[in-house]
Amino acid sequence: MNENLFASFATPTMMGLPIVILIIMFPSILFPSPNRLINNRLISIQQWLVQLTSKQMMAIHNSKGQTWTLMLMSLILFIGSTNLLGLLPHSFTPTTQLSMNLGMAIPLWAGTVFMGFRHKTKAALAHFLPQGTPIFLIPMLVIIETISLFIQPVALAVRLTANITAGHLLMHLIGGATLALMSISPSTALITFIILILLTILEFAVAMIQAYVFTLLVSLYLHDNT
Image (cartoon, rainbow, N blue to C red; front, side, top):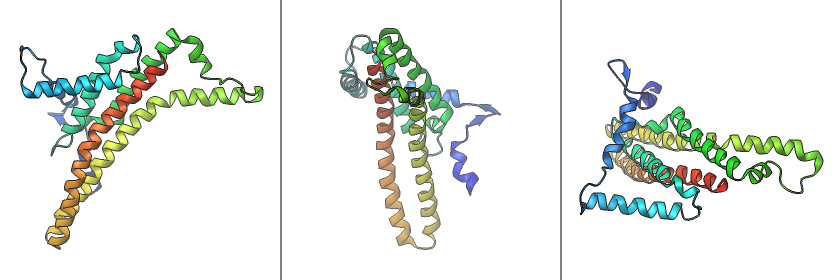
């Protein structure tokens, strides 16, 4: 049972070779670059959503921060599409892998921190020691602020991994319970099936919300350092 429960989180292979890179590249097919004067409805809706999200997310940034617009929009589209594709039956969700999420979070976080030390050196260093701190608390506060700074990318990755993994596990458990109850108690199985449908709708929302939250937090880190 435990093997079946976590089988969907194992990296898929084909002829003994991992195909996770192909799975990661697949969402880019869903967002074709427009090459016509008048686009179809799907591309028009995609462009409208991207413009709306970028306008809302980048409104707080100055000119230096707005240079990250393309990267942040690509990030939210990638995470959102990957999460949604992972809800399909017999599919693999790369964002359930902590290693991949750390691979996204650490470089982005490091880029914002390096920009802060480059453009706002005094403010970045002052963050480690708030003004008016008693002398005997200075070493402790410097250590605490340093730990809190380095924990940011870990929190980003763990938050995304935990939310996506928990939803997939819950859907798997309720789906298994529905199949088991069909031969025992059809009425109870119907109730669990309705719960499963509602949970699936919730997971669609969670998939988009987690993509937005991940990108928004990176945007806030960028705002603090530019």
